[in-house]
Image (tube, rainbow, N blue to C red; front, side, top):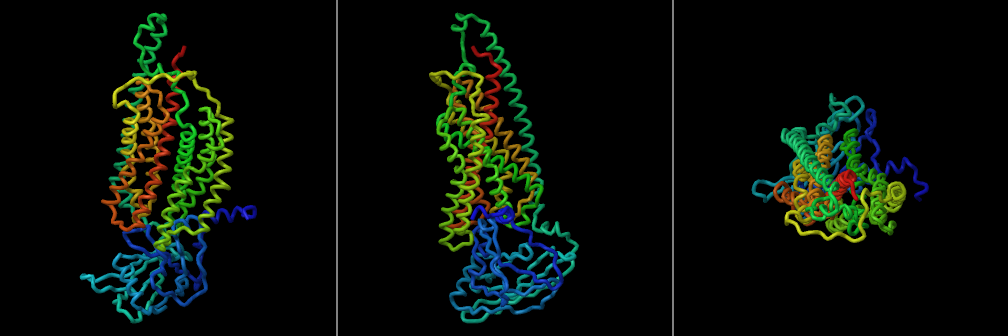
Length: 577
């Protein structure tokens, strides 16, 4: 089956096709019904016809073909059955009737009490409407029965859609409720490429606070880089002068001298880290996550991914699979440098570390979604497709990267020889302990991104479309610079205290940023949202844990790579006997 899968079909599997084609007069325009769900729980969605709505009489179109991103995001497009033709106006017309028995009334009442909204699509343009409303006392409940559609066109392209809900009818058991619609066409000056601009919110995303936060983070980077450079240059200059002076002493004076500092651990600083297999896999995964983040943001800046359903998720999955050699290269080369021999096991762990975490969380939440009969429940076929991507794409590419990494840069070429017997670590102040450094290391990186986290959270957990990817790129660069500076300073202090356990310390001190992000997600949940229920709570905290963990692994890898270059540099410039 996989041998006959052509490249166009593979692209169609990942990315949605452009269905917004030139239209002719009287040509059929499809109104797709997507999902319905509570307004305050955006991710808790159900099929539109899970509520006892009725469909139109037209039965010419089957279920819409989904891409991988749409399937994972719970897109459930079903034909509305309404007869709509391009530039053909329709006066108010009844398209079906609902026999409202007690069960159907209870379903509508429950939806109205929980502020259910529904979503539709015309020519890939989303439309939202409210199911109904209750009176001031909350005793009587009313259903909106009239969908008044106003569609704008520019030439032969649809550029605007508006929905007005009218026809408020009180829900009374054992009655018949007529559902009606009308369509009005109007010329519009909106260009086709600008038709999604109405869904964006410049007043929110380009607010002065957003600009100020970026400027503030940028100034903090300049200050931090300058401070780190000045301190390390002055301190290292003094260290080099002191070590050069010690080299001129004879053996007796050197033995009587007060030897201390980072040079004293030159025989242990390049010692393999504890648990090198896990450590190498984390570094490789972090490098891959950074590559995926950088590439996806670049693609999002060039292409308006928000205009296509599921395109962002499909792009991320495609790029993640394509960048698997990055994971294998950095993880495999580091494991080889540290003398690891079980490289096949390391390759498997590196390849499946992130997919196992994401899929494990998704499958756990999937059981809850199935229990709730939510559209977010991942179909079995989609699960199989994701597993096939992991085994037939990610794993082979990771193997290629691992082989290249081991052969091209897997030889240990450290500037200092590693002693056979580890040097004892002397006692030091409590604030110089690795555990304390790890806890404090993530504060500044988190401080550089926490305002951007608010905008990202709001776009995902509320009804906002994130489109300012230039801001996101700046924040990513700022985060990397701050992380590297902080881990370099922490590592220098640790080595100066003659503690050579810098590998895990540099990784974890940078990765601790994820702990602060996850703590911030608790604040956002309780004070910035009105989410409720088991499904939404598990969905929120489950995927926030995945996001925070991936961010922590990326920051840890960036911090380690920068610190590794710093450590190699300072020990290369010191003459070692």
